[in-house]
Length: 264
Ligand SMILES: Cc1cc2nc3c(=O)[nH]c(=O)nc-3n(C[C@H](O)[C@H](O)[C@H](O)COP(=O)(O)OP(=O)(O)OC[C@H]3O[C@@H](n4cnc5c(N)ncnc54)[C@H](O)[C@@H]3O)c2cc1C
Image (cartoon, rainbow, N blue to C red):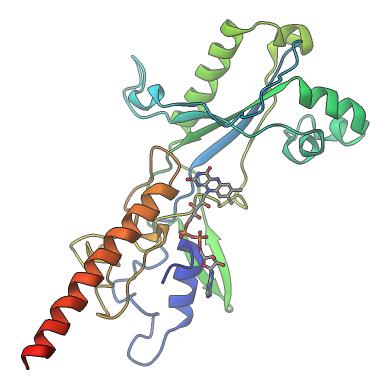
């Protein structure tokens, strides 16, 4: 299975039967738990100079992973977003500015977008059992309380300070060098992971280290659900690499079965 960590958990929970009354692969009540999605903040830096970049999403900075002097913990990573377009601004505007942006003419938004550089700040959220996928009357319900917010807040503060020091022209566009930003809401679950974590102990993990369900020997999960903790960077290459690793394992297993059959 690889339905994405939310839908895989939901499908297995919906598949409860007499032998598995709490859902498939859920004997230890771990399925759906430890849901994570990163704490993500989008930020816009406006400059009096237009931004002519064509390939914007080319910068990623991981230095803040090592924390700072009075905070020796991972704070997260910073990366460029793709190009900012005028039409995107109303959707991404922070609550404070949203009412004004709504009535701003499209041509003005286009000019703002031409002078904008978009930043994406991403901090790991930590695996907590109560952050989970549940079914309520058959519908998917996501319980999520953000954690590790100090790391996120420090990253936002640190990056804003760096931007101010790099290019103070923002202060000529917006008063006090304001950097409009919005925290991605729960609906933004692009980096969903962790609902079927892997591990050696069936009491605390849904999958074994080959991503096979501890409870069922013919069920493998190869989406982002296997992460026991979140990634420091974007997740997809790790999800793909793991799926290839599991495919190799299955191929070897099939070869062994075929050889055994041939001998028999
Ligand atoms: C806007 C956006 C931007 C992103 N940008 C990046 C990025 O720059 N870098 C990065 O690393 N990651 C990025 N991501 C995250 C990335 O898309 C996910 O991490 C990745 O796709 C997750 O892989 P997955 O295999 O777990 O699930 P998915 O890729 O979501 O695959 C799940 C598949 O299962 C199917 N499915 C669901 N339910 C069922 C069902 N019941 N039956 C059958 N099929 C089903 C779905 O249709 C889907 O095709 C982004 C995500 C979004 C939304």
